Length: 205
Image (cartoon, rainbow, N blue to C red; front, side, top):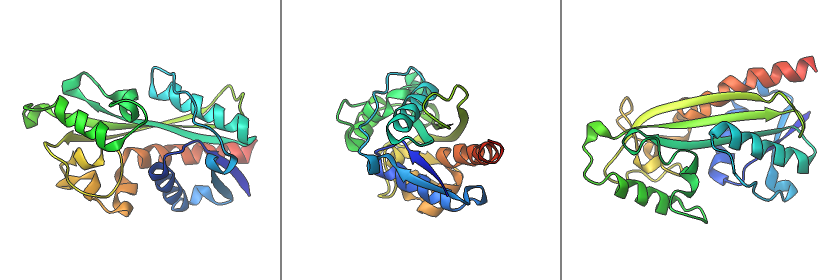
């Protein structure tokens, strides 16, 4: 059994990734362990991109846990706001991170903006490091297109899910079942790309 540290303290994100992991054949023989098991403190996300922050978090977890590590950095990009909140999504309304405050600030930033100008997308960059000094991290990128609603709808999910509207589902991400979200989300798309790469590396190393 190969143990891999999951570099996140976000319980919603941990539950999603562990659930998605269990659904894929490429994960046979792999055990995902949250970094909280090792009392790993949160890494300082000083990167200027999702890729940089994901690598920072993976290296941090791998060095402390002494295991390979997976990390993701995710955020929402709003066209009208020139890509904001972007890499600052989790701390858009300041620290400590607060989903309700972040969502409220986003809605306030778009007050009065018409529906056709509220296009947005979630990004997820997910990386895998074999060890802390791995010079060639495996990297996957998933996107999920949608738009920002005028008000909160739905009680599932986390983060900006209650204001992220998916047109082909006719609802927000917070109104989706966990099972459906875990097959169509940005995080799901990134993980689907990453798992075969991890499996190949584990079986050729």
